[in-house]
Length: 341
View 1: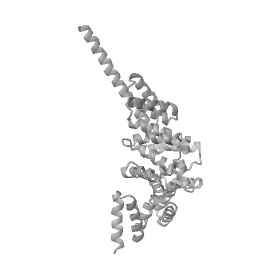
View 2: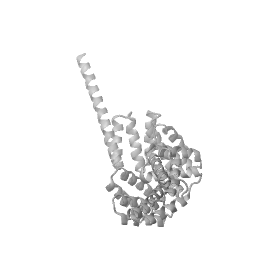
View 3: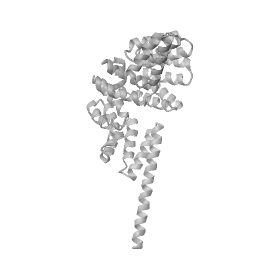
View 4: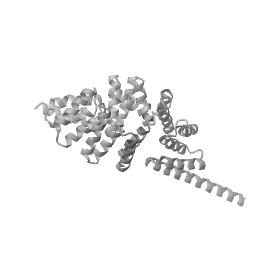
C-alpha cells in the first residue's frame, strides 16, 4: 500500500509539473507573438499542445501564430481544435472568422464572428467590414459605433473606423475605402506587414514599426498604405520634413488617402502654416461627408482663428455623431460661449 501511494504521488507530481511546463510555454508563446516572432511563438504553442493536448489557449495561440505567418490551413486546424475543446471560446471563434474573411468567405466569416462578438470586441472590426462590403449599412453602423464608443481604437485606427462609420451612415462606400477593407488587399503580403507595423507603433515599439514599414516599402515602394504608415511614424518621432515626403508620395499613389491628407495638415499646423492646414482639412470635409479626422482638425483650427461660428457648426456635427465624446462637447460649449460674445 505504501509503495502504491508512492507511485500515485510521483504521478501526481509529474502531472502537475507537466501542466506548469505547458502553461509556461503558452506564456512564452504569447510574449513572442506580441513581438511578432510568429514562427518562434508557434513552436512554443506546439510544444505546449504536446504536453497537454487539452489546453485550449495553446491551440488558440498556435492558430494565431500560424495565421499571422500566412499558414492558413494550419491556423484553421488549430482554431478548430480549440473550438472542439471549448465551443464558445471567443478568441478562436474570432480567429476563424478573421481567417475566413481573409479568404473572402464572408458568410462563414460572419457565422463565427457573430458567435465571438459578445465576448471578443476584436470581432466587431470584421463584422463592420463584412456588412459594409455587403451594403448592410445599419448592421455595419452598429458594430463600428461599438468600436468608437469602446475607446479601443486610437490615432489613425480611430480615423479609419470613423470613415467606415460615416460610410455606413451615408450608405455609400467610397472606392478607396472599399479597397482598403477588402479581403483582396488584406491578403496582399505587404498589407500584412503594414498591419503588423501599425500594431508595433501603437504599442510604442517605433524601432520594430520602422523595420516593418521599410520591409513593406521594399516589397512595394508604391503602396499608399505603407507610405502613409511610414509618414505617421516619422511624424510621431519628430521628423516632419521626411514625414511630409511620405504623405505626398502616398497621395500620388492614392489621391483619396485620407490618412495622408490629415498627416499633411497636422504638419502644416505644427510648422505654423495654419491656413494651409485649414485648406487641406476643408478639402477632406468636402471629399468625405460625415465626421472624420478632418472635421476634428478643422474645428480646432477655426477655434485658433477665432472663427467661432464655424467651429460651433463642426463641433455640433461631432457631438451629434458621437454623443459620448465629452471632449468635443466641452469644446462645443466653449465655442458657443465665445461666439455669443
